Image 1: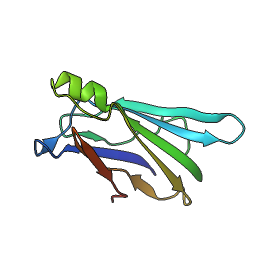
Image 2: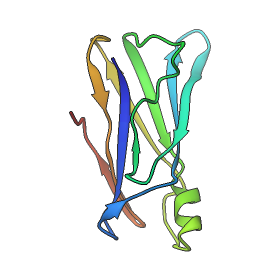
Image 3: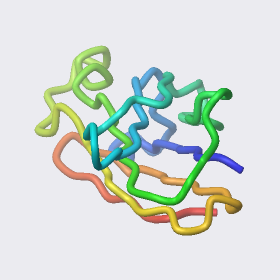
Length: 113
């Protein structure tokens, strides 16, 4: 089904647009492999991070948000230059939404719908 994300800048109360995002899969024999990337749109969303030629499969995934680029473009001094979230997929038939709530000095994430 896929993996999507949504970033909200909680310090401004609006979506964080223009955030580069990379998605990786952990291959035990070769470590992390980039399988998708993109940039959040005006609504702070990336609807499908998974490259179309790659099937979702069970295992560990890492999504990395380049928050330093976002804060720099906004002329804001942030504390976290990037945020990496590692999660496990057990059922590849489901859709996985990984939102990020972001501010210059903190962040949180959860499994969304």
